[in-house]
Image (cartoon, rainbow, N blue to C red; front, top):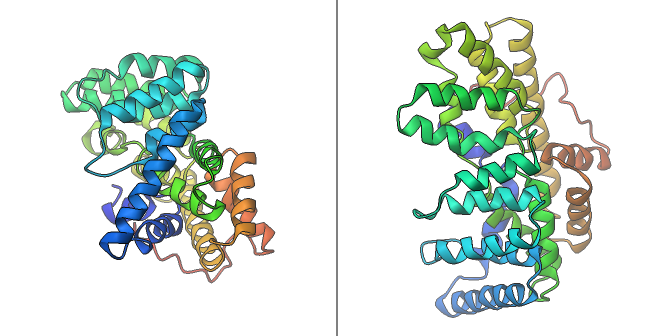
Length: 324
């Protein structure tokens, strides 16, 4: 089972960056006047993004505002406009699905079909479907969706691309400097694009694994998710591997080793970034890596290697999350 504490830690995929995002949004709002000034700044940024009207600007405007006062219908309309201008972009199709799930009247099924068309190898296109099947207690549909994920080659949330496109769109409004725009975008994207994983995890544990077909499918799902483009997806894949392979088996041992490496790399990234993330030079380098690399993990490794640190944990590395 994936423990809540572990998923909470990894929900941002890089916890440090979301903490920094909170610093940007909260550090400027210590009193009412500053809060109002901050809100006006965000509103102005959104207005300029909407006025620009290109797909990246519209998508950035859609995710820019989060919280209880935001109208999810308005956000959905903005991303729908973005998709209409760039129907072949899977990152926009994915964002459309995520914002659709926040509007009761929105039917995500045609949007999921669109993502499967433009990116047929992405197992994430079935994550909402399996959740709906689980909520209506339809085990046949759950197994069908699991099989679709298992037949995929990867599980992408378009993390890097969404952040890079959004940051560049915000920079064109000239309302934020680069470090602020990047950190802010990471924060709002993390709150928007990451999907619910619970239905997949639940389908691959417990009594259902007594069925050899389900067990085999879940093992393949684990492999796909371990190729995900964020650490949280990789961690879910590792957790499923632990559930579906005997302790001590080669795949089980490999999963434990991969988890230790991932935790070390996230720790290293946090230590490297903590005191320099608000530097314009560092933010530019990070944004370029996110533009060039497909996955969060690749960005992480590049950061570590650029600092001339080892990308693999030393023998004495004590994994603080080894029990998760």
